[in-house]
Length: 480
Ligand SMILES: Cc1cc2nc3c(=O)[nH]c(=O)nc-3n(C[C@H](O)[C@H](O)[C@H](O)COP(=O)(O)OP(=O)(O)OC[C@H]3O[C@@H](n4cnc5c(N)ncnc54)[C@H](O)[C@@H]3O)c2cc1C
Image (cartoon, rainbow, N blue to C red; front, side, top):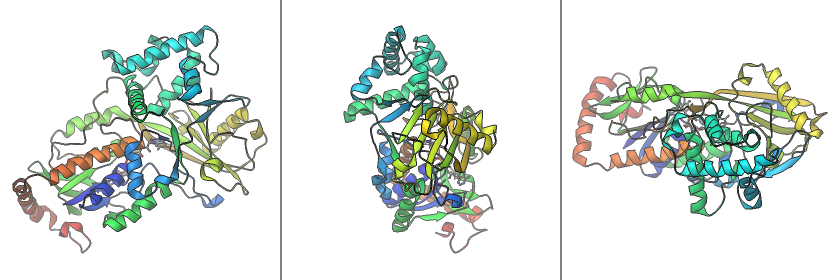
């Protein structure tokens, strides 16, 4: 079959490579001049370096993302050190881990800033939280994570030390916005995977920039497998006839015929593309409810080391809602003879996005100085602020089950992307799991009885003459 994949983010890249591995002929259409979507490197000539658009961390249960890295040959560039550090104002540190002795201490309520009776309350609330996550009460999707914590009596000190950060880390949004069901579902996913693999969930990171990790290998695989990639190809509609997909139309009017299409655009770009798909109103209604969440990342090049002891450190009681600092020297084995590169991430950065670059840099530097005594005299050599107003999406109460399935009512059309229904929320793994499911839908379509395929083909041929014959060039795959 000729399969068109719309969107060159992780969901589209994984769909394209896996369809091609399965022997299909693939054309990948990306509206920008480069691939990668929300996971990209941003070369900076001022400091001759290649920072990312934001730190992307891995969880040990990311099996589909790892399968993608296997397909493009870059799995070796991910490290799982098994720990992160929590840093207090003034510089004190504490290792954070969900396994071993540290994990046990956490389960017993021994968290930084949690003292006296609150430890007992924390241990009890945590046990209730896990129980309710595993056997979910019907009201879990009616309330926010904030309300859930209050109902189970989680002390504020334990929320500050751990739980609010976990909710933001897992859901991408603040506890008073996110549905309680979202972190609950993710905790269950984590617990099940930890049980299956008999290892505690751990956090990992790329040891190279995101283009080297996700794109360079993909481009090589595409060349080997004959995938055609077209940049600046903005798809305007996915075309359907007799409940079967027949191709796509680009913004400039060009039509590309296809036997199958994977639509892997982000949630905020899907409106309009599926107008010919029966049931699209329901998909668009879901889209309305998955609202974008901003992340602000700052790539800070400093004249000296700030004395981090771990690759990534979570700042306890930080300025924003979840503050993390990443040491690129440690993570990438980077040479620090010219400058020291630290990257900071503020998730759910609703307030920060409106500030100027200089203000954001000042805020982040003041924060580093509060937590790292060695940063007190550090000078900024170069600051690179990356605002991503549409980084992830929020899932508010009452939205359980609204994310659409990869299978659509149209033969040969599948949806993919982190916003479609997966075991995860808005993550790289969600994007790749959606791709795996979309590819299954398409390969199942490829196996349908020849009689049905021929009927769809006949419809397509007549539509093709009517609708696709006006604009065809030598490189246009519609000429197939
Ligand atoms: C700063 C930041 C930090 C993050 N941190 C983490 C993290 O630590 N861990 C984690 O797991 N996840 C993280 N995420 C989330 C993760 O990056 C996303 O969930 C994932 O990359 C989404 O992939 P996708 O393919 O679904 O969408 P996208 O990456 O958005 O790709 C969609 C592609 O479709 C293209 N497109 C759109 N419309 C059209 C059209 N009409 N025609 C053709 N092409 C079109 C777009 O240009 C884009 O390239 C983070 C995201 C950001 C922004």
